[in-house]
Amino acid sequence: MVKNLGASERHTLEKIKQIDKILRQRTGIKLTDTMAQRIKSGLEKISHNESEEEYLIRVLSSEFNSAQAKELIDLITVNETYFFRNESHFKIMEEEVIPRLVEEKIDSPQKMINVWSAGCSTGEEPYSLAMLLKDKLPFGYKFKIYATDINMSVLKKAQAGVYGKNSIRNSLIEEYTQYFNRLDQDKIEIKKEIKNHVIFMYLNLKENIFLFGLDLIFFRNVFIYFDEDMKKEIISKIKKALKPGGYLFLGTGEGSSILKDEELEFKYINGGSYWRKRQKK
Ligand SMILES: C[S@@+](CC[C@H](N)C(=O)[O-])C[C@H]1O[C@@H](n2cnc3c(N)ncnc32)[C@H](O)[C@@H]1O
Image (cartoon, rainbow, N blue to C red; front, side):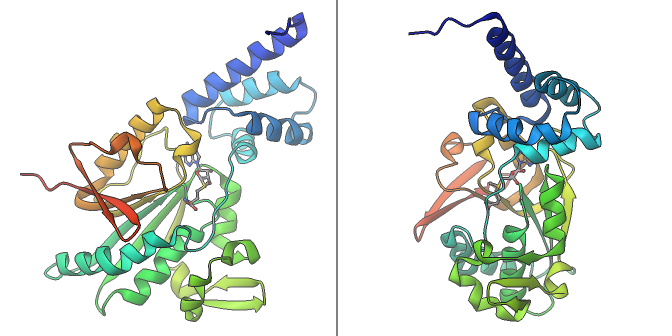
């Protein structure tokens, strides 16, 4: 049974629909109940004298790079992540992708591997990749990891490179102890030699993606925010950013929309999967 809404409830519902619409237009993010709840509890601190909905609409419609809009996005986005999340991807990297990249670059003078970690959150994913590549690439090979997110607070944390218990819950990190300092039993700090390989940057996936010619893209657990149209839009952007022959990893269960893609070939091995951009004929 549909509840009869009073005028003020109807007004609020209208405003929330409006917020959802602006948020989708500007970031691709669809507003969920959990997000609405997070906004509500965080908003008192930042909304000053306006009503919550009016405040959201004004800020989201304004110059999107403003400090207020960024503060709001930080409130909305959920940033769960940890080192070597979805271990099978790192096994595939070690056993299949890295050896192939090494072979493919053997005659290239720079021997440079360019990687993008999209929606990198607090940095555990790009740092896991950096540790793996540093450890497994032969002498003379170089790599750069571009790590991007829409949330400025997580990027700041990523740059600091200090992590607690939750981040180091997968024991695979113990194979890379030479790349971090242990500050205490449950706290680690990433060493400079790893940090130097990672460039953290603000990037809103709804806007222009300025990265291209990439050998490898990790795009995991970001699709949860988006509707089918935005997923399609992003997949076409990823395909442009990836080199022919480049590799793409998505989060578990996130690839249903590209299972039959003309430009991307699906590979399933050892309990994990990835995509490869086809070489031009
Ligand atoms: C759940 S985290 C995934 C972290 C990491 N990739 C992993 O799999 O562990 C998703 C990240 O996507 C970011 N994100 C959501 N919408 C975005 C957008 N429109 N542009 C850029 N980043 C976005 C969020 O801020 C969040 O940090």
